[in-house]
Every structure is written in C-alpha cells, then in structure tokens.
Length: 63
Image (cartoon, rainbow, N blue to C red; front, side, top):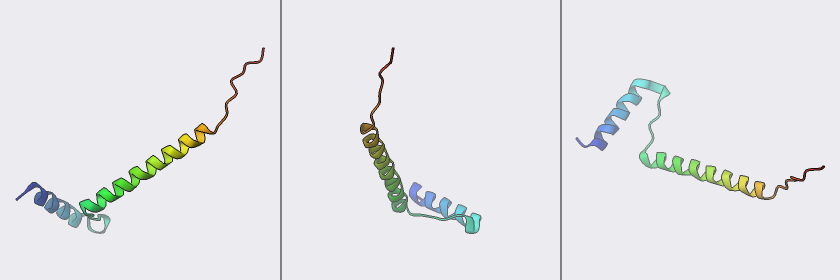
C-alpha cells in the first residue's frame, strides 16, 4: 500500500469515527482553498500598502 493510499485510508477512518463533525476534502480542493486564502492575504497587503502610500504624515516639530 502506498503512502497516499494509507493517508486516504487513515483520513477516511478518522472521518468515519468523527461522524457528522468531520468533512473530507480532496487534495485539489485543499490546494484551491489554500490558494484562495493566499490570494486574499496578498490582496489585503496590496490594499494596505496603497492606503499607506496615500497617507500624509506631518513630522514637523514646533519650537
């Protein structure tokens, strides 16, 4: 039995033991979800950088 088959078997067994509390997803679905999360994080970083670039700061010190 290959390691991939073994991992699938263990995952399925664990999901069966958990009953309704567990949900199995495919590796492709997990990768897609990870990519979407990464993409959202990157978009948030870009939005923050653009917002920060448009801010003005006044560092003058009055004497």
